[in-house]
Structures are given as structure tokens and as C-alpha cells.
Image (cartoon, rainbow over all chains, first blue to last red; front, side, top):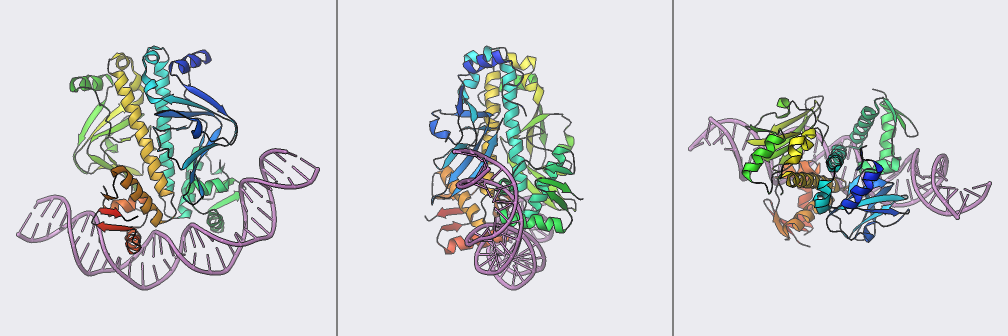
Length: 208
Length: 208
DNA sequence: ATATATTTGTTGCATTTGCAACAATTTACA
DNA sequence: TGTAAATTGTTGCAAATGCAACAAATATAT
């Protein structure tokens, strides 16, 4: 995974951040991040840790919209951040905020590492689109079975093996695929009965 | 909608494209675009027209994955473009291809409109993420009813009115929401019975 | 203008799925 | 280490939805 400051040495990272007027904040676990942010049009990068975006229903229900990990982006530029959405740190988390307009401010564009930075940023944004495309591909499958099989196919391809360990808990996976967890467990059992997969905890083997 | 060459005059656009070694191609209707592309790691921008990405099933079924219009992006950088996917022009369409590495080639970074171009590109990519996020928000709704209501809410907000005309045919909408079209029609009827909406062709009025 | 293609409307039926309500197991942490 | 919290497993049931197979209405092309 590329990070925003890939191929820039530590000294220059500090300089770069100063030029960008970037704001880097360290949060403890379980902090509502958005409540502290007073920026206008910004991109936020998760340097370390992870956050959950939680949608608060009109009648008090909470839905996890997404979970972002190291290297992932959010911000007004990328998503409609509304009143109803909280962004909660899942662990100690460091986030860097950059104002959109500062991406091309006078100071930064003259620096010798600007090009590298821009390339990193574009790469990160592209990866973000790629991730979303993958999730959309899963979500558009009509049945839980197809969602699971497609997810396993992707994992298998990524890991280069018919056997792999999924990087999510089953609860998180159900959320990611947007299906009921218990119904998903049921479908996993059917897949096993049909000899399409074998599982051991979160270790999956494709049998076809 | 921002376009890649926003705020750059026509003369400079030509220069910019030359510097970027950008390839601009005009396609007639119903052409398979990807079959002609011989680039490595690229971003493609739809300058004019529209395309459909179509997934070809192992047993001959076709599914429309997505439809991209003017200003939207695709390419190896943004999506896994595989054997099974075709990209078909829906009308006469102009597409510009840019190699990722050329985004920061020596010639281009010295030009006076580079900054504008970079900002446009980042804006376009961000918009792309935003679009995907919106679609994901819809797709994660568990019922057709909720998908429709959320879609209408978004449209209503965007248009700033309780009455608006949806920019898709109902067939396309069903595809976008990934639900069966006939089941969607049924649900639309329920929504009308429940006095939540009124429709006239593709003109929707929210009654709440 | 007319034939052809596309979109829309409708309905029965089988299947899938969400939901609820548990128990059992595993993990986190004070 | 012990207790609380989170995750996983299971199942009955009602509701939602995909699918198929049409007819009707629009739109598109020659």
C-alpha cells in the first residue's frame, strides 16, 4: 500500500507537511474525529490506525457504513459528510488533514518533492476508487452465495492461493457484503455442504 | 461537473495534451473500446459521450456493471480491467488516455498550466470516489424500498426540490440499485399506495 | 412511415433473506 | 485470572425478491 509520503525522507516529510499546512492529529481510541475538524474542503489520510464511519438513524439505530484503515482517505472532497455520520477511532489513530487548495499553494509547488507527493496522492485516490469498485462488484451480486463466492475469488486471487485467511471477522464481512450475519452463516454452511469450500475459523479453502 | 481541462484555454489544452502524450480517440457508437487500448497503466477520461462496462458471464450472460458519462474516469489505475469485461460506447464518444507516469513527466511539470491540470485531475478523482460512495450507500440498503427512498432523497437534495426527474430509465435505475426491475416496479407501486411518492413517467414527487 | 428494438407494466411462484431470539464460544481487558 | 464484551452458531417464520413469461407502450432506425 502506497502512503502519502512514500519515497520522501523524514526530514522532507516535515517540510512538506509544513508547506502543505497539513494538520496531523493523534487520537486515542473511541474518539469522534469529525467533531474536532474545522476545515472547509479537505482530504484526510489515515497515517496509522483505523476508523469506523457510523450512520445514526433517525430512530437511534447505528449502521457501520465503512471502516477505513492505514493509507485510506476520507474528507469533504470524497464523501458527503453529514450530521448523521460519526467517524470513530477504533484504536489509537493518526490522521493528517490537508486543505484542497493547499495542494497547489505557492510554497509547495516549488519544493523538490512536490512531484513525488502529487504522484502519491493520485495513486492513493486511484486505489480508493479501485477499492470502491471492488466493493460495488460484490454488492451488486444478487444473492449472498454469489457475494461470498465473489469475495472468496477476490481474496484467493489476491493471495495467490486457493487457501487464504480472510482479513475480516465474519461479523465485519457480513457488514461489508451488506447481508444479515446469521443468513450469511447459513449460506456458508450450504457452501460447505455443496463441497464448494472448506473452512477452519477464518481460513477458507476453495474446493473448485 | 469539472472536466480535466477546466480553466485551460484551447490552445493550451493542445499543448498540455502533447506534453502529457495524451491519446484522444473518437469512437462511433457500439465500439468495444478496451480492445484497442495498448497502454500499461493509464487513466481514461470520457470527454464526450458515454460508455457501458459489461461483464460477460462464464455462460454467456451479460451484466451492465456501470455506465460512465462525460467527465467520468476509468482505467487500469482505477479498476481491475479483466478479460471478462467489455467497454462499449453507447453513442459517439471521445476518450482521452493518459499514462500514469506521464502525469509527472519532465515536460509537463514545467508548463504553466500544470498546477491547474493537477487540481482538475485530483478533483475528478475525488468526485469519482464521491460517486462510488453514493452508490455504495444505496447498495448497502437491505430492501428495494429503502434503496428507492434513499435514491429519491439524494435526487431531491441534489435538485433542491421534492419534485424532480430522474436521469435514468427505470431499467437503468434497477440496474444501478442492483434489483430486479419487475420487483422494483412492484415496490414503486407500493410506495404510491402508501402515499409516499407520486410519479408521472420519470418525474417523481416526494409526498413527505 | 413502418418495422424493430427497447422500455415499461403485471403477476404467480419458489426461493432467499432478514429478523428475532437464543446458546456457545472466543476475545479483550481491568 | 476472572468477568464482561464481542463474535459465532443455530433455527423458525414471515416478508421480500428474483425469475419467468407475458402484453403493452415508447423510442429508434431505415
